[in-house]
Image 1 (cartoon, rainbow, N blue to C red):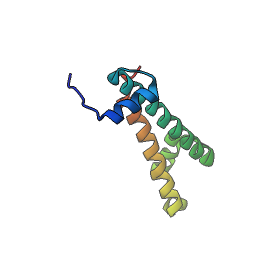
Image 2 (image 1 turned 60 degrees about the vertical axis):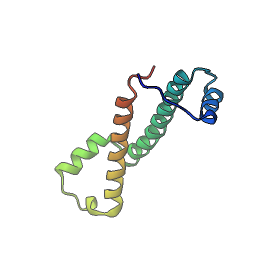
Image 3 (image 1 turned 90 degrees about the vertical axis):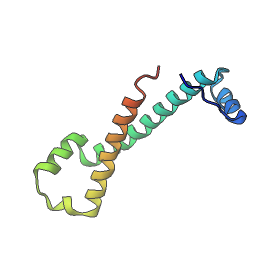
Image 4 (image 1 turned 180 degrees about the vertical axis):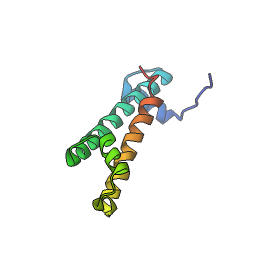
Length: 102
């Protein structure tokens, strides 16, 4: 295991934020809380797209891939598709990267 040297102010902030005096444990707690916070933000954004289009991204993606619709060629539709796909990808990455967190 490698040691991580933190500036004193960062160490103090970790203790203040988490209430945990051990830096390594405090850092894990902070990472866990941050991951949960980001997932909450992403889930809210995903729900907005699901409400807007009345379906999950997977269903929308199937339509996008299988049907050649004129509205798919608008800036708004392409932008929504790319943003929605990025949110789905980001969610998967966070879940996988932080699966080890308690």
